[in-house]
Image (cartoon, rainbow, N blue to C red; front, top):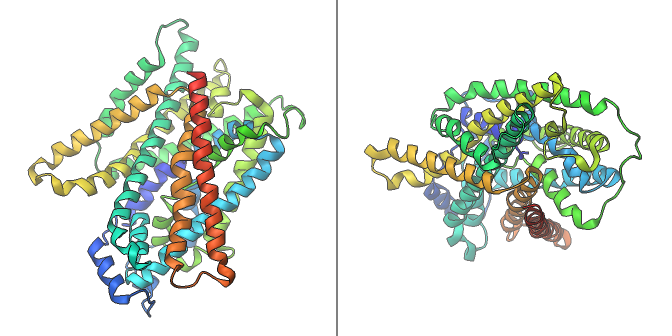
Length: 465
């Protein structure tokens, strides 16, 4: 989650940067020139053989990195997702959505690998892949290649910042729950808690070197594992019967279920950096392949946690199951404290990624002598906007649904399918144009999730405001 106040967010920064895959060093002009020279035809250039990696990752480490990016604290939101589907519908829905998300990741990686051959570059990031696809697609689309790269860059930026707002809400809700228990009637509103959280956020988001942030990732991992184990203890304690919750809920709630699962499961911003850093990138796709093995584990764990957590807490399941734990018990209190620090560390690392994207796109407009000041103002401004957004949004699970529907449905479902169609438009759309039909169906599904999920989330936010 994380999306997804998911571990995917903070692990992605470390994975991307330490392997040199983010930000991309492939220039726009280089891609466009090489694409035009090749004029839509593949050649004997093999990207895998031309990758020069100082520290390439093994299949096992790539599996671990991808697992971290898709599995984390997002799993704690799955009971709330099942609340909008039901027990049986939640199980089958999680499996189906997991397959769809996995296939869309496959499309993105496969397209990136194929267009890298045409572009004669070793590897490409998400935005660079989109640019190269348009540059090698139908001629009338080539003029939009640079614009689409900038668009995807900013879409990724706001996706990460949206996840940061989710983190702030979880931190504030957890702190408020603890403080309100020990100091009843303290008179502090959610807005006040958000204002207080802004102080440490403004301080720590000024750290510009990933080297100083990386150790926090390890701490966050440990805290998340401990939190997960404590939550499992309380879920299995006084466990109700399997028929204690409905198998199926009203259909109008399904869009929130879909959006939450996609938000929790999607690690679309991380998959290409992981694949780009592999010693044997040909092992990423295929059967079984790193991608399929990883996502099978993720789907299974998300399904189990959602099912058991929903049976235990039912309609009271909150956006993070830690909020359902009894504050008066020491173990539960420890879990709430752990999640506060884990998510705060996650926020710091998550925030690094959009700031790198924004700075990469704006630094040429600032005089060299003002770079430090400009970065300080930029980071403070975006951090303040993120906290302000969190202060205006009421409930965690609704914001998760809104983030999943609006951002992850586009970047995780629509964009990979659209790029796959464009890349193959003048090459091979398959027998009876089955690639066009299948990818169009995915685009329609993603659009359905985007529209209905956003509408349902807004309705719920207005209703509970």
